[in-house]
Image (cartoon, rainbow, N blue to C red; front, side, top):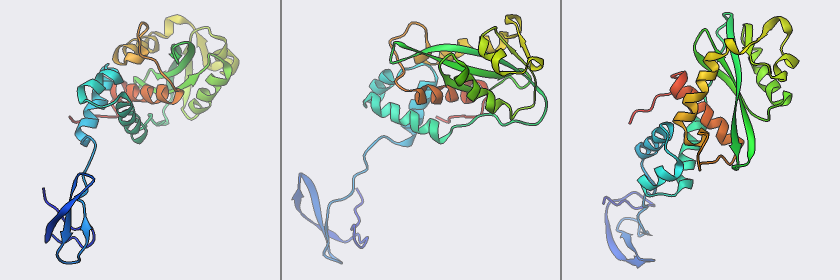
Length: 229
């Protein structure tokens, strides 16, 4: 192992005993006694592989066993990657048709949470989403952001929040026109253990549900994120 003095950077040193079980050195140039810095933690390529495995259906606990680290470490790697690469499609000005739907999930295994999703029929992209209750307040947060898009028509099911907030001339409520967004829910449950209907994997925060939905959209649907492993 190459050793440099922490004070002056010199490579001229002699051994100077041990401290707390670590070899100590004495710099010949400046007289500084030092213990070499050890780099702990997994390399970046392992962290990216962990994210890739998470994107392909493995739970934090399973990935942790593979890397011989704690599930909390995997959680931190995935969360950091998602926050650093958080991305949604940007409006492009052209008029679009948007399909709306909600899919349910659980927070802390018992509290039901809803993920409201907006899918652009023209670009085949999941353009936005919002996590929360199945109520007007949650949908209104999503709808306010969708106003940035030039939406010529919304298609949705008959849930009341849609007709309460979207102008009548912009909304058609019929299950026959929401096939694309409904079919988008299945792969989200397939690719992520936490979203499967019968699973021991649970979500403990709305933030992680949002970040995981972003990873699903950006990696599997919108193709905005690629991971080289």
